[in-house]
Image 1 (cartoon, rainbow, N blue to C red):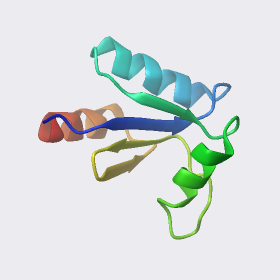
Image 2: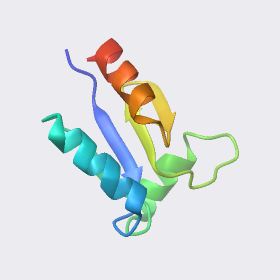
Image 3: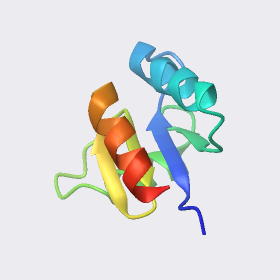
Image 4: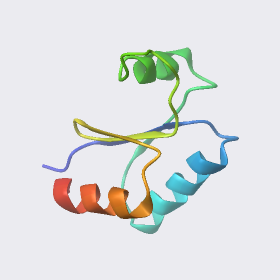
Length: 82
């Protein structure tokens, strides 16, 4: 079973847009959660961090959490978890 991929970010954030294109280029299904447009998405992101800050972009792959990962790190975890 493939783990669920979520991208926590904001529509206007250039890094969030970058990760959207990155995941789409790999034909991966993911859920984009705009933390600036949805309080529910913002609260879900806060729950991921002890400091409860909106640390975005954050990508979750199943239980793995990646905060603004490099391409190399993201590819490593995608290969390992998918």
